Image (cartoon, rainbow, N blue to C red):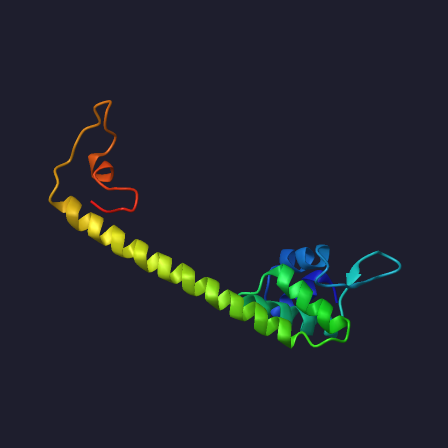
Length: 138
């Protein structure tokens, strides 16, 4: 099947199939007469695997490593566990940082409600922000 046919089978844009082919995640055969890339049913399975892995937050680089392990007849499962464990930790840190940012923003807004609007005067741009310290505290 062609790029367009493969893309339709898994309901994604053909450009994604072309990109994955260009970076080596998909490895179609070339038609000898016209040079078209031809994909097999195994490529459908591989593409669905890539999309599932992306849905779990794996990067294309990580997916490539996972596929390389499998192609070399090594279980990628330990790598997958390690990668997802690391990603969970990173996500938790980002979520915590965002929660703290949300609290700082809400406190700032509450404090700013009692403050009058000001005009820039050459020494000040916005006195609301300037009233805060570097950590976002008034």
